[in-house]
Length: 526
Image 1 (tube, rainbow, N blue to C red):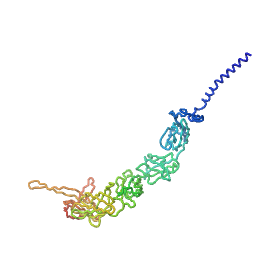
Image 2 (cartoon, rainbow, N blue to C red):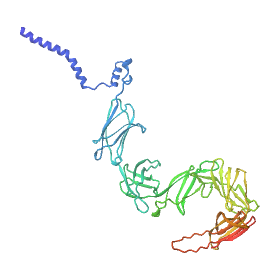
Image 3 (cartoon, rainbow, N blue to C red):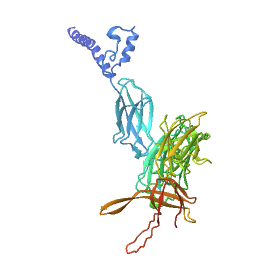
Image 4 (cartoon, rainbow, N blue to C red):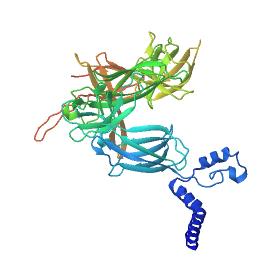
């Protein structure tokens, strides 16, 4: 009997020990096999139990405890396998602000932390040399401690390749280009850029399929016509020519307001470089020089450019148009409303040409205005814009070439009258040689001085004074207002003298004496 009671006692003791230890082991096992409860799980649990108050009802973030950052990781591959060095960026959603940035490692893997509860766009940006298309995922939001695994496979992009040559077929290196996606709405985006090498070749990779407009970013080379290409990788030769930029603002001189619509023609000699429409008073455009520019002139300064501006109901001021600091002034078409009467102090009417410039007291714009000689001698009529003006008048056919200032006010019902009196003197009418279209003559004043040497002897010293040159066209030139005195009249000669050459020169010179009533008619020799 005693043998049976001892084993039974041992069994009871073991069972009792297991009953005591089993709850602790079970709880420890359950704790090691499950993840720690998250803050939102705890909040849901408290809500299910009827809620809590005080510190128990607040999360760790509410109590000022730092939240764990979110984490983004993954792998980037391309057609050839893992992609090393791709840029991985988290932008704030809807903006260009960078929140986090990293690059893929040699295995194509990446990992970075982002701020939780902040919406971001995840972008994968490969190098341009890879020719792969970028990737983007928008409006991603991660919670505190949350992780996102994003595996990205980038696709191969289209390619635009070609070569730039000049009008002679020679390569043009060092020219920056950009490709703009064609957009029917006219708001194409820049899709790629490149620069030509010493052979003129360029390659743009990573483009989407479709057509692109190419533009040069170098101010010295432009396409003579718009260039549109397919992103199909086929090499093409594109011709570029030297160019010039035209930046112009056109304003109404009476109001100072921009001219709504106008046309600009840019010419160089007999060559038309550009004919373009301006809007709202502005034009900014590159004008290509004509092809077949002589090879020796390609790197020289371009020839002068003349601009002709036409606007409905407006006339240009000056010829060529008056342009100051890239601003061209125009005025509404008006009937002649200003008269300038020019006479010498002796009463003789002035019969030469007038150069009239005006300065607006309102805008300070300075322009030239054409005036034409009326039937009556010394009377000139022209149209001034409406306003208050400071007028400068230059008598081109007078010996003295001083500018004579005046003031004028014009407006509805107002006609300005400007009298100008020139210093008097003699007149010389130059006529060219028979059959000559144009020649040049000069007028040089001679001043004689007598010096007393004593013993009744004297010495005459001749001084040459001011020299004036005059162009003499087929119809002749009348020079008025010559101060009294003695003058040499001559024709300038130019001759190239070579080493060892013997030259005998005979200069044609004539001496004349002028007084206040003199009138000399001189035919120039051949």
